[in-house]
Length: 104
Image 1 (spheres, rainbow, N blue to C red):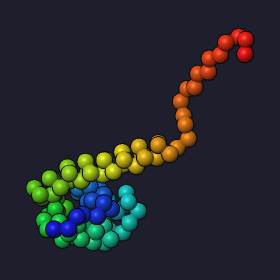
Image 2 (tube, rainbow, N blue to C red; image 1 turned 135 degrees about the vertical axis):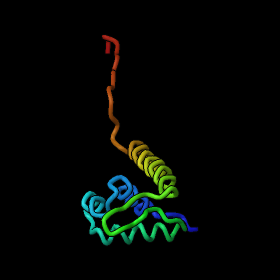
Image 3 (cartoon, rainbow, N blue to C red; image 1 turned 120 degrees about the vertical axis):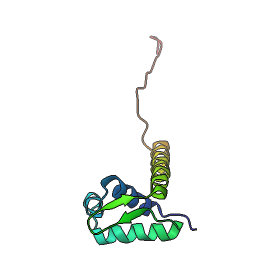
Image 4 (spheres, rainbow, N blue to C red; image 1 turned 90 degrees about the horizontal axis):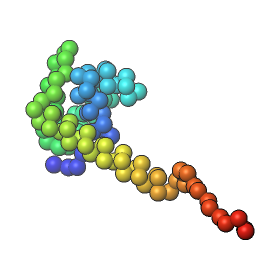
């Protein structure tokens, strides 16, 4: 097993939420074929089948349910990390109170 690609995890989450490659593709601004390819690569990368596919329907497997929950947590953590790092190097914000004596 190789480590999964974060973009592929994001694509998988969209497919799982929508139960549709087309719906996920529309949300992501990608073609349905590309979305399907990314999920297939993720499945090959981690060595499990994530989705049951038929001509009209997509449903998540038991392994897919587990990966979905882990993937959501991973992507939320990555987002939080990015937000916190950006805040460290961003412009100061908030209320600044300055107090001085009258004699100044």
